[in-house]
Length: 219
Ligand SMILES: Nc1ncnc2c1ncn2[C@@H]1O[C@H](COP(=O)(O)OP(=O)(O)OP(=O)(O)O)[C@@H](O)[C@H]1O
Image (cartoon, rainbow, N blue to C red; front, top):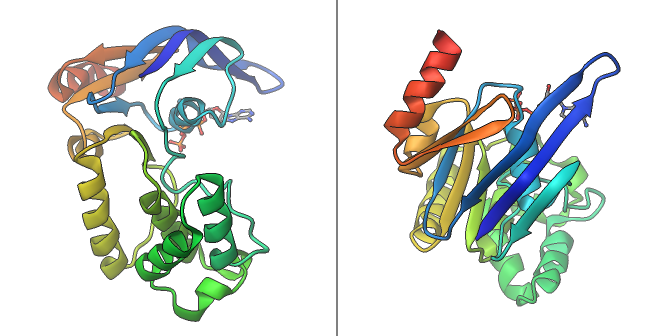
């Protein structure tokens, strides 16, 4: 279970306060995959980072009673002066997994050849995205967090391979995806929410959420 209780988050820009959440309360139970619709720049990444525990609320409480992934595409846990091999083995140890398994799984999924043993700092953005995706797939979580705004791979073979593994994993997991478009959410979830004026409005169906979202964004 993930629960937000009266959570507020805002950023001071020097002139105004950008409000992301304003005393928002909501809960995402296991098995209830949720898509969150919000226009660009309104706080999708901040919200998913708060769910992951990467950003703290200004006020309120966030309770997490499950294994929650880092957002798909997030590179914050990767040390760029180290190779993918070293990073994969280190992260395996953090999660109490077999380093040999995590290293060989990621090496196979990434398909970046000898670069797997080179510093991550020398990778293209697509190669970094592949490595971060592979790491996510090597670990087991109850909730998977997907931020459509994160860098993604454009390599079709990798996307096919990683997409197949992800779909298998998601059969037994709960997904939370943030996006500015309903078509992204449709791939993962039936129920959806709309982030609007610092509140999360929850709906049983994506159709209902879309109605409010379209009304807000298209007038
Ligand atoms: N550390 C920060 N300091 C000040 N403003 C910030 C900070 N982080 C985010 N913001 C602002 O908060 C707002 C929401 O940012 P966020 O990245 O969460 O939005 P987003 O919906 O994911 O954006 P996009 O769709 O462009 O990826 C933006 O206006 C952003 O400039």
